[in-house]
Image (cartoon, rainbow, N blue to C red; front, side):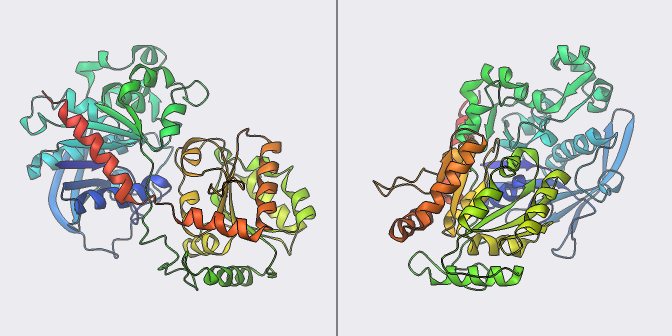
Length: 480
């Protein structure tokens, strides 16, 4: 089948979160499975154009958005699958992927129109147009209105994937003329328009042929008032077409047997390299090593969603009582950065906080830590717990979203399970989970079994990609 992806991020070119990882892997899987896949992305000025060959394929693409007119040039990178970059410095030369600028809506309207124009110029008729998040969520509406008579798209079906429902693309209603959809303004949510707003993600939910999100539990959670971010009623109204598919892991990149970023390779059959990675990690961070002292790891954006405020009243006491070590890599909200800075000062031989992001250090933490802490308030999918499982690093997580779908509670009686989950997002829940993990760590036969269970899990794209193929086929079967 022919599949068109439109997204604002794709690893390794442009990344702020999990969307980029999905885009770096799912199109490649589908291409390898024999499908004709095309990807359309913005060419931000932050993209390193020296890392690939950028071939100009369309020299002059005229994009009109209301009274605004932009000239774009299209570059293609690669063939497996081909990626089409929209080069428009007026929109994408901002020094960062996302902004709060007054034309933010136009930056991604232009991307969506460009994707359609590229298909027209190339004669590419997509069976499925797979739109990612609000930045591509008007595509279903555009294909059903402005481009409805173009035979190229007569049989195209649309899938909208929501990676995080809290990012919705909400703009003043004055942005409406820039969509070029004035003739069908009645198709926009009228109550919102009367309130002076328009919501791009909502329009995608209303008009896409299918809606997916990145885990089965999150697909259910976003249909509740607690996690629905104001859109739960619209999602419940089409519940039969809302599915959750877990993100996959690229085990070529994240695998202790071949990881180029770690000093010692290891496997489930030979775990000796894991302890050596622990020693190397602690030495590189200036922390002392002791064979029987567990290391807890955190690699994350430091934002409210990730639940790290729970640590403030819990971790100092646990550090004093149990003597474990904590390694943190991340940046974000000043209050959370300050929390980990204070912990490092108070426990200089137990805590190291590396402020910022460093990819090789992220890999070394996954390989060298004994446990990985993810106390997220909500987590659409999560990837680090999946990496942790493969590296024999036991996840300690809140039972929500993709964390609930991928980590199974350890049961010492049956020897089953892959980690520790706490049900209630409160201090008592987090304290219980960490202490349960620490107690199990001291029981080496149990701990070794727990590690083996996690390393045997398979969240590869070979598994998850097939689920997307099933969704695509169901959408195509509905074509008249």
